[in-house]
Image (tube, rainbow, N blue to C red):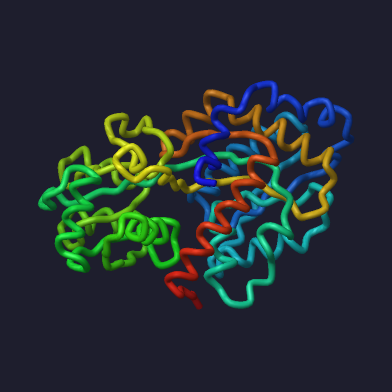
Length: 325
């Protein structure tokens, strides 16, 4: 299932994306304002995307599209609110992949990311970079693996925090390469990147957008990216998969979903109009500035990604016996 990822949406044909349009053209929606709930604070990744998308959708639909930030409880407040909202298309959720990880990471989560939400469209994907301090004697994935095998448990790796996709991807990397690294969580990508640059931690997995400044200044070096293909931010950085770990791919994605039971014609309309917005040059440029790539695709593609990632990272959380309060 590794090949099924958000990046496969990039090659979905225009005909497939357009399939939703006939149904979308017939539905009498929307007739009033729409709320986009975001599980984070203003000016963060999902919020930036939701506001730009909401602006474009509002202009097309001729109704207000209001962004409602519901931060707290690692997003569970927002997720539960949307799961319990009427399935009428007037309350939608713009969320990252945290929605699937939380089901495994927290006890008594009152929602199911598969059963309680209707997929609408993947919106963006953001690559993570495997980076190292310049003092680390490894310039490639193969060299890093050899180094880790020579000294198992000697090297720490930084991430933006416990339970983040970066953390779980680091553990997955260690598992698949049969190496061992000790996890050091930080409070965000910028502190994790700074720790790597200073030599406080030798290696780390951080968003490519967080790592780029350290790499350009020579305070850190890029080993690889976890995306399925090379990225515009670092076209010379190889992927982990092409560097000797076949099938390895992980990306921070953001998507739009609705409460389960939302009518299919409404899902089709939002999907079609969101895909149109993602093709606009000003939207793509704004996203590229924060290290995200506009994706867009079908509800079915997003549903497959949610199911695949739920299974994949649920296994990693189980392997780690990781639970968060």
